Image (cartoon, rainbow, N blue to C red):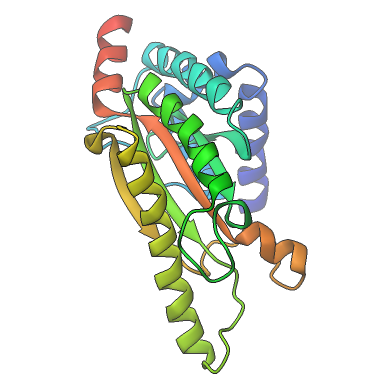
Amino acid sequence: MKTKIVSLFLCVGMLFACNNMQKGAGIGAGGGAILGAIIGHVAGNTAIGAAIGGAVGAGAGAIIGKKMDKAKAEAEAVKNAQVESVTDANGLQAVKVTFDSGILFATGKAQLSATAKSSLTQFATVLKNNADCDIAIQGYTDNQGWKGSTAEQSAEKNLALSQERAQAVSSYLLGLAVPANQIKSVEGFGEANPVASNATAAGQAENRRVEVYMYASQKMIQEAQAQSN
């Protein structure tokens, strides 16, 4: 029975996805918060979202959806960036930008490559053009061990490396004049939340990544609610 209910919600979510603006309106409605939580959990980003009290109305959700469409279109022009629409903790449309760590860093290192700096320079412009979006930066690794280390030690080293890589991205963006108050969190999650199987080299490569989320700030939500009233 639970499976059927979840499937029903996901099917409704797919209908909303047919039109991003409609998606913003539908998910922004009070009942849509439940759907947003389910989709957000599947996307692995339920923690992303500004702290607000209560549900966001459908009209405000549509306004925010339109803003996120703009941000997504701009992000899609960034070289080496994989861009998709996701749902934040408030059930609102957000943008997830993924950078393959193979593009960003050498194996086992946290120093940005020349290619990474080029892509992040483009991306910084997107962030500054959408200054009413809050930003969360998350680093991840595969589950491969480090030479001479136990599995537990390797996991700890991977966690530390993921944090250093997320911080390297944040520091570079700040150096390009992205406002410090726009970046709300910088976290490393190590081997957690894999997006592919670690049993293959291809899957491991997918899991080594830095994700940047652009989501509605409290200011954006308040302005959207005021406009929709």
